[in-house]
Amino acid sequence: MIKKLLPLVLLFVGIGAGVGAGIFLRPVAVGDLAAVDAANDDASKAEEDYQETTDHTEHADGEHEKVGTTEFAKLSNQFVVPIVKGDRVIALVVLALSIEVMAGKTETVFLREPKLRDSFLQILFDHANIGGFEGNFTDAQVLGRLRAALKEVAERDLGKDIARDVLIVEIARQDY
Image (cartoon, rainbow, N blue to C red; front, side, top):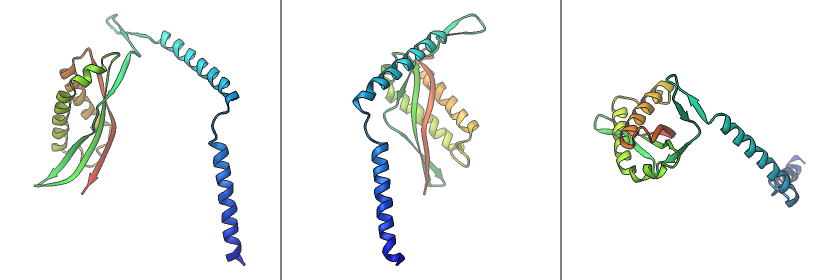
């Protein structure tokens, strides 16, 4: 008896889940678009007000620095770093990096990307050779040292007035 009821129960559960997903994922009705637009306008106004109040920070020496005027330039390809032990590649580390730059300077990053990639690869290879990708390589201190070295190279290659920071957007290790 249960063998005959089980397929029916599963059928009704599947239909109910499908209807529920359809209701939940249905597109916004045209009448609701006005409410969504009003909410977006309110959010934009709040963001503008926030930007006006936080547009400058004052340093100890009295200088003002613009805040919120940066962009992120994501480098086009991932970085692949081999982990070598003896004469064998035992793992690969794959990273995706972005550079925080002053607003309007992303084009400079892309124009100098081959030089940056070469410099970044050298830092990543050095980091791998000293064991930076061994053990708990995602530890905050370990990644902090790597990020600082990458930032130093970015400032050297792009200029301190352009490069603000280097972000490690993705990192993964594949052991063999």
